Each structure stands twice: as structure tokens, then as C-alpha cells.
Figure (tube, helix red, strand yellow):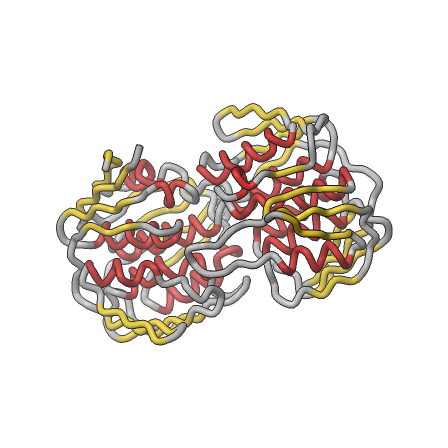
Length: 416
């Protein structure tokens, strides 16, 4: 059944909202439970379509999983086969994260190659090059990656700071013989969260000069662990508060994970107060224009670029946004133009001339963050906005309409 969000714009967000667990942390940590026998207990797992997809992959492999609200009990003692079929992988590219743990534990894996993506090509060459460097034999047949071998520690220099490649190589190297150095590794909060989880399982991972040093161990053990709050949800709600001229406390948000976003919002005139329990956002005026360039962490996240475009559409002047991470992350632009935004794209440069108001319209989500950007625009627009294909949004945001409603937004989920 297809659903849409119906949003009546013009209501400031006010109150307190709890930030959910990190989707990207949860997906990698769920995959990492394949590294050991026994039952691991993972708390603060968001209830999302992508999490459901990863659970299905592990159950196909043979893990026994039970769920109680936001806690997963994962028993990976017995694995039927070290394989992830295309039928499962096609639903979510992050399914490729089971490759590293399966090779590490079973010394073999057969995983379907992920397909394309709405925001541009996302090749897995870095994953495979890292596997080969660790001594794994890689073949590709009929759309499947077939890997065999026992990992041997070495130095791996990633050509780009790919998050999922860093995570996959990290999970493979913890059971490798000897030491592994991952140079030019990603450093996003969810990558560090995975490393912390692996260390709690008995891995020996150090972070030295921005790179990972892994001392291989022979075995790991199951653990109980709590996933960190989602800094991308934090950023989205900070922008949502700003675009509605609201005042919201983001319970559990970790300001240190959102430094680049906070700096830009403060530059735009948003008042932000950090404390040990979360972040308070207070906005009462139209945002000032600014310049943003997406970059790997700790730079400005590409996953918040669409939402920021919605906010900058209502700024006082002309803003420039440069998208350096994905060549096609512009699906939200045409939809925002339908709502009256004055936006032009030149290559990877987005030029936004602020307007005084956005108009309601029927718009369509094409990916997680595009959908979030359209919801935010609908919250600020005059009239009633319909956001179609909300299943994209459900992949990355836990019950977003319920959270927004509690803050005073007028938003409902309806059959489309």
C-alpha cells in the first residue's frame, strides 16, 4: 500500500523530541554480529525499512533474530550459508556490509553486487580492493561477488574515504592474521560507533592520526551494546526547527557529531545551545544566505544538503551550495521549484535565490534525504502539501510524522 504525507504548513515547531538511534550505525553493527557465535543484544535500533531489510539478510544467512521495540537480539551461532541473494541486496545497498564479516568468519562469501542508486553511481571497488589487499580471492559471476580466503593483515590505502568500504574492511580485518592499517579511512560517527562495538566484542582497534590500526584476534564474543543517536536526524530536526521559526530541544543529540551543521546554522542566524543532554534550537527570523560545500566528515554532510536547500530557499539573499560527494544528488531541486523556490543548478553548483514564501504543491520523494527536504519545505509552505512515495523517507526516519506532530506540525500519513 502506498502512502503520502499531507502537511498543512505555517506552524512553528515547539517542544522536545528524542533523537532516534543512528540508522547507519545500526546497519553496520547488525552485520558485524555475524562475526561471532552467540547472541548479541543491540539497543536503540531505529524502526526503519532499511533495518528490516538488513534483518532479512541476516535471517536468510541463518541468524535467529527477535525484536522488542528498539532492541534486537541476534543469535548468529549457526549460519546456513555465507550468501546474500540479489533479491535481498537490491532492496538496500548497505547489504554489501555482510561481505566482510562473512569472509572473516567463514573464509568465503557470495554476495550480489548492488545496483544503481537515485543519487548517482556508488561503486564498491574500494571494498573489493580492500578485500584483495587482505589476501582474499575475488571473482565475479552472474552478478555475484564470490570471495574466498583467510585475511592476512596489511596496509590498505583507500583512494577515497568511503564509509561502507571502511566498515567492510574493518570488519574483515579484525579476524585477520597480523596487523592491518586502513589509511584514508572514513571517520563519520557511525564508523567510530562500529569500531567501538567491535572492540567491545574483543577486537583490538586503535584510531591513530585519523587512520585505523587493527591488531587481528582469533575470535570475538557476543555483547550488549547501545547504538549512538543519529546525527543526520539531529541535523534534519535542527533545519526543520529553523525553517518553521521554532524552538525545539533535541533530546540525546550529540553536538560534537554535528559541528559543521551547527556552524552553518549559526552563521544563518539560528541560535543553538549545546548541553550534555542534547541541543536546543531557537529560530525567529528568516535565515541569512550562506555558502555550503559538502565534504566527508567532519565536513558538511551530503545527507543534509537537500534539507539545507529547503531552508536556504527562504533565505534573505543568494546562497551557493556545492555538492562534491554525489553527482546526481539534485532530485529535490525540481520538486522545490514546484513549490516556488528560485533554484538553479550548474554542474554540481546549486544557486539559491531566497524567496519570501513557498507555496504548497504535490511533490514526490525519490530518496531518503530528498523526501526529508520536501517534508521540511511543506512545514514552511503556505497551504497543504502532499509528499508522495514516503516509503523512501521511512527508510531513514523513524516515525517522522509522529515526532513532528508532537512538536506542533500538522502532518498526517494517508493512503495515496
